[in-house]
Length: 540
Image (cartoon, rainbow, N blue to C red; front, side):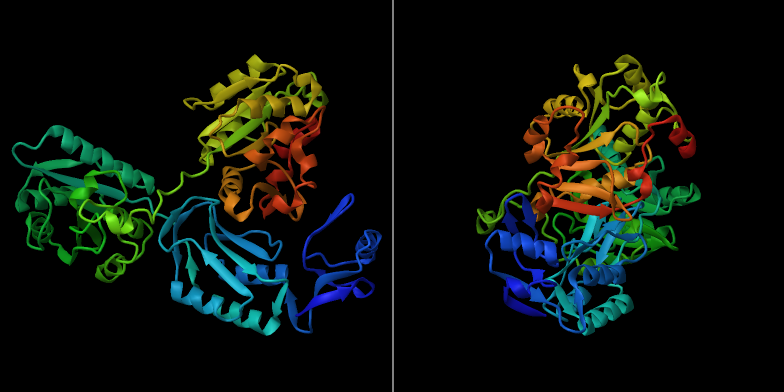
């Protein structure tokens, strides 16, 4: 690639290096200049620009990013649409445990300075739609030979994987000693059940036995008979040796001990064994706490079907210090701030419209496909995507719409707000909804009540793509390159949206803030709404 100053008379076909703002127009960096763009620059009295020219064999940034991301994507990993030299990889509908091979990613990043691949940490649990990795080509193009080499290496080594979590049935043996409070036992059972449920598993009712090896062995045998695929032992006293009571119970039940201890704090005192092919783990004392500790790291591997033996545990030392503790707070004091709270993303469901094209019926109360009222499907999809804050804007036939949603999405903390001037159009609904969101809401996904085919996975993908630090503050879904709904807006744009009037949505701002916009390629549901009886029948 050739880079440098270019006279405007020679600029047709060049790639603009820096965004240039002109009266009434913005030409973004990376734009291949055509005659019209050059004419606009000339009218602004610009005689020279910084530009890039591709040489024979070079591959443009978007194509290169997309091709390399395709080579990295494997089962369960979705490649999103490439733009501005970037192609993101996200978790598919199942989610799972993200695995990244640091050595292989390092080799790829070392092939050419224009190739950059950034990922989440290895062994990170992720949900559907969460961002896993980003491929960024810097800047504008790379040699085709380097890209070919990178694609070949990525496909042959598979440095990124996303094994899904399995729905394992887990059994817990909890031992007792005189003086141990029942509340402690109850708390341990509850905390363990929450850990298992968070990974998609199910708990068999826990067994309480005396703190003896023979009692533990008998309880383990009973749990195996009940179909346990994972065995856990919570001792009344922490395990301190391979021959302690808990490990001895595993051996008496016909099992073996594979590894004792781990370089993770809290979580050092853990014992890994198995009975046949069923993992059997003596929990560390810290497992009574719901806070992140060593058992969480081991359970993630087991639920994802990954090896979880001595070698894997030994490799957890780097990053294994999970807490501060009293004897040595000073060396790290002032160097590590508390982790920031995750952004709070709300769903704003617009359900106030007059439904004039479907009159006299209110389309939001009609069923689309096999589901119930379409507006209830939209709200249910928002909750299924993992959004805790869902606010519905009501207007036309407000009581009937609210009742349909409450019946279709029971036992959810749905918020409702009325747009008193809803007849003025879409802007009235936006004003009412955004004004009602709490100050702690970082961004809002504006969902239309007549788009029930926008799946929970799509909504989760929009939320997972949002990242103010990376400039992804407006997230727009696309299908085959065409923009759809819903759109995610960072809070910084709320003020301008509130200033809109008439039947105008916030989409008018997309052109103004093109630099802040990030598109994600998803399914066709983002293009399908139901405005007429014909469209409703076609979608059924």
